[in-house]
Figure: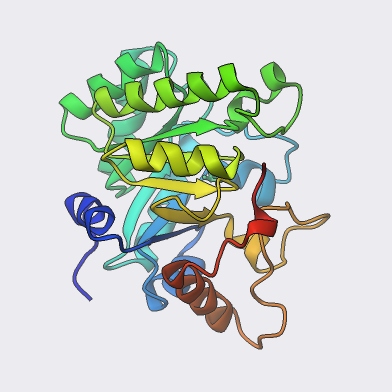
Length: 265
Ligand code: KIV
Ligand code: NA
C-alpha cells in the first residue's frame, strides 16, 4: 500500500471515501493497524486512562506521549501517525511548538492533534506555519472534563451547536488539516462535515462524518467497565484481534459503522 498522507486524506474526503482511524499505544497494536490497512493511527492521550489507569487524561506528559509515539512508529510503515498534544502543553505558542517538535522530530508523528478553539487557534496557526500538520479536536474534549463536569455529550442546545460550528470553521481557518468531533449529536456531526472542506473524523458524532475513530481497547472489549455507547466490541463473535480490526475497517468503509444506536440526538 502507498503511504497515507495528509493531502491523501483530503482527497479521500473529496472522493467520498471514508477514513479509518484507531488509537495505538505500542508497536504490536500499531502493526495490527498497519496489517488491516487502517488509514490513521492515533497515539491518543487516552493512554493516560487505558494504559496508565488514571481517571482522566490530564496527568499525561509530553514525555509520555513521545515515548508511546516512538513505539507506535516502529510498528507502522504506510499508516499515517498522529499524536496528541497533552494537557497544557498547548498553553502558549512556544510550549506547543516544543511539544509538536518532539512528537514529530523524536516521535515520528506526521501530524499533531490539539483540543479546543478560541485562543487555541493561534497555537494551531503557529504549528501549521512550521509545516507541521494539525488535527483539531472539538465537542467532548476530555482535557476539559472539569469544566464540563464529566464526560457529557456536547452541542445539544442550539446555541452550543452554533458555537461548535463556528469553532470548527475557526479551526479550519487557522490551518488545521483535519478535525476530530467527539460525542455530539449525529445531525451536528453531519452538518460540520458538510460545511468544512477538511476531513472530519467522528467518535460518537454519527455516520455522516468523513471518517471514524475509536479507542482500540474499547473496540476490542479490553477496556474494563462499561463500553461507551458510541463504541462497539468488534472482537465479539470473532476469533482474532486482526479479524476484529479488519471488520471495523470494512464496516467504516461501507458505512455500516457507526449505526444509529451508536449516535446521540
Ligand atoms: O486520546 C484519544 O484517544 C482521542 C480519541 C478518542 C479521538 O483523542
Ligand atoms: Na485525546
